[in-house]
Image 1 (cartoon, rainbow over the protein chains, first blue to last red):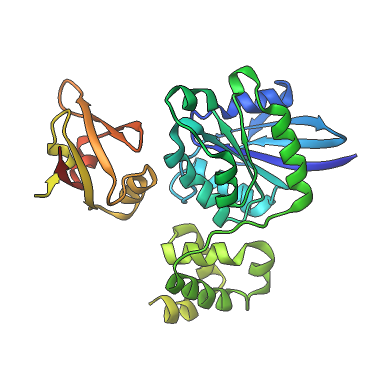
Image 2: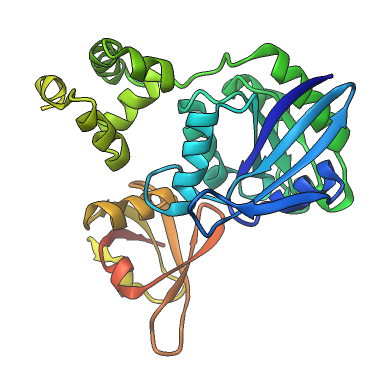
Length: 232
Length: 77
């Protein structure tokens, strides 16, 4: 039987744990992230002949290197490269939630979006163009109501489909920024180890942001001098 | 006229014009959706005036007064 690795991520309070429980039937292996006192939950879900190993990542608003939770979530996605990342988005609070979505797209994660709390969004009078959102982002979007298990089968279908397809979406920035990303990428690509391990485009974006973790990595690889010529 | 977010009274709104502050703290505010051009409303203040509750991008956010000091807004009706 085919086995895939699926990571769940989302802002705090979006219903991530509920979706985890719905998918795994509540049977979870609970431990810690290596060397951290942050809980790591893992479970299984079998759907249409595919075994999904489901990993619950910490609830985060962002993927900067600012807190231990954010760092765990982002390192997991960068280093473990799960087959699919399910981004659980609060439909009643779309704008703030999509910030994390954008960062996941930058990370070149193979995304499926669960548009959770669809019922609350509706009761607030929001009409979300699910198809339009999916087209704009370039990833599948599945409306769910985790509290009453609505949309769970559709979500599993979308995960299995996505695992076959791989990543195709990406975020494009203004032309001058794209040029800078390209120039930084050219320098980074000379380092084969780095190229094998990290999405180069993502590293380039993080270098422009001045992300501390990534800058440390670049320094370790001895690329900082060359980069200074480009980024000043 | 520009005012500090920390100076607005409950019920008053403004459009964020700039955010001062150091790297990490500023980044966190940006992460939470406090970016230039965003409308923000002060909902209420804690009994001693700190923290304050805000409405931003359709959700409620609490900030310490010293965090709100670095956020500048142009008041709107």
